[in-house]
Image 1 (tube, rainbow over the protein chains, first blue to last red):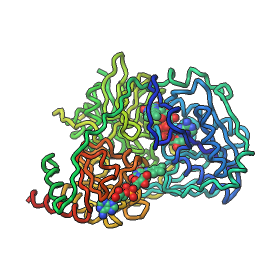
Image 2: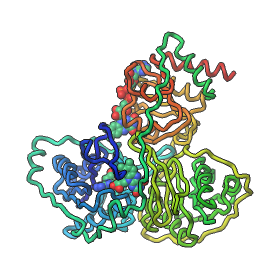
Image 3: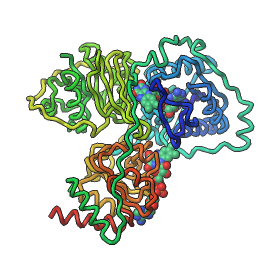
Image 4: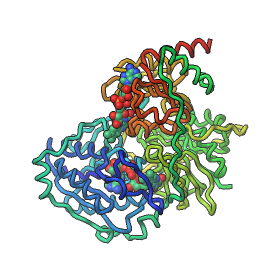
Length: 262
Length: 320
Ligand SMILES: Cc1cc2nc3c(=O)[nH]c(=O)nc-3n(C[C@H](O)[C@H](O)[C@H](O)COP(=O)(O)OP(=O)(O)OC[C@H]3O[C@@H](n4cnc5c(N)ncnc54)[C@H](O)[C@@H]3O)c2cc1C
Ligand SMILES: Cc1cc2nc3c(=O)[nH]c(=O)nc-3n(C[C@H](O)[C@H](O)[C@H](O)COP(=O)(O)OP(=O)(O)OC[C@H]3O[C@@H](n4cnc5c(N)ncnc54)[C@H](O)[C@@H]3O)c2cc1C
């Protein structure tokens, strides 16, 4: 089974994230890394090929540094990587991002057909949870998302999806686009051996021209949704903090009553 | 005035509050029209009309319900083509966002998710406000391309009644492609109802974390005295003390209630991502240095096992 895993390179959530003068995400000031939620997709792909056969290709679109997200995935055990990077890509919205990723997946598929496209449940910066559905739409593939359990039998993929009201089993034929949640597995840490092996694994770098995508279709100028203003949220005015001296609960109830919650 | 389509979120015909919020928001952009997929449109026409919808486009195809988001996106794309609305508004649920995503691609339109406010943009299109990076920034965007598709975060827009009569129900003959039916639900197990309000819609949420040590009784008792939903931190969920569907935060649900109470929760960035836009925040924590206290309107440094029961008792007493 040939699996493509989409991984995003994001600013570290623990850092002080912010914006550039043109209102795009500042990707310089804070260290970047592989979006933690995409590690679950990489892990699941590795488990699937380890239980059978096939190859895992990791794909990222982003600045040149985004190769770090691919490297980390290769260290975990993925077989090869593709980085799509191009000056024109900066500032792309979700619509343009999905276009580039879809074209890249098609190109990867020219070598050997792709059976499964795996993604995380959301990036840790944009957090939209829309790219998987957009990829399915663009590639004309079934979409099976928010998997907390995944099995493949022959050419059928089956997942479990849980929400507040129900637990569902969802099924489709392969090839398909599947997104996985952080409930699905425990991602492995790269081993020393894995880190050494990753150095020899192939990583290709593609530009928009390699994908037949025109620069006018992507990037900030093409963005169909455009940020016009950003403002740091004013720090919440420090509230009152009391120490419980036997009456903390009553004081809390009093506060809630004063705000009309009781 | 152009129509603004609002996809109705309902449970067996019962319209959810997020839809009424979306209708209120839609009225700022044009003439609200509801799109109702599944059985029960006629029954819902009154409540939809009272909140501003003049028309309900009813799609009563069982095929759509069985097949997740792809068919609904097709139906909406068909309606966008036929009616050229000024915008389409959907709830920011998992399904809502995915339908929105596919619709944006199908109709070559810009997309904004998790908007907390919408308004007409100068020069056409829709202006939206989002809260990003775990609530540390507020972002204003304009979607001008195509038919702007916007998903609204629940509890962001106060519901207004317009006093309108029942909306006119108009049956829509939907064509669902075979491709859209490729993925299907083969089994569905309903979870036992907790009797509490739904987490994303509740006006009050009381959450417990690792500090509960697995005993959620004081958290649930306080929640019940306030008519609140119960949430949990990931530490509590990972320990198996509470279901994942109750997890608040980056990898759980994002809530925006009038009041959020965090008990025995430290306030990690990933937890904050899911609750920082709450209007009033209260915390009870043993550790005066816990980062959650940076966010609070009111905090009690103390043991949740004594503070919560005392608060619950006092609230019950006040309620008589
Ligand atoms: C704060 C903020 C707000 C934004 N708001 C909007 C908005 O309202 N509308 C809009 O159209 N765009 C918006 N964007 C831009 C959008 O986030 C990016 O275009 C992004 O690439 C796609 O959305 P996402 O990161 O939310 O991905 P999600 O849809 O959350 O990602 C899900 C999965 O898709 C895969 N994936 C996503 N991006 C990539 C990538 N570049 N390379 C490889 N795999 C990937 C990963 O597997 C990921 O786990 C915003 C960005 C930021 C930082
Ligand atoms: C990719 C990723 C995604 C994540 N997504 C989420 C998410 O969606 N939601 C989420 O919540 N977390 C998420 N996390 C985890 C997050 O980083 C924290 O680990 C988690 O929120 C901690 O939960 P906690 O506050 O309950 O536990 P802790 O951080 O251990 O805090 C427990 C608190 O309880 C207090 N306490 C202990 N006993 C008592 C007592 N008797 N009375 C009062 N207070 C007491 C302690 O002082 C402490 O402050 C994510 C992490 C990652 C890496």
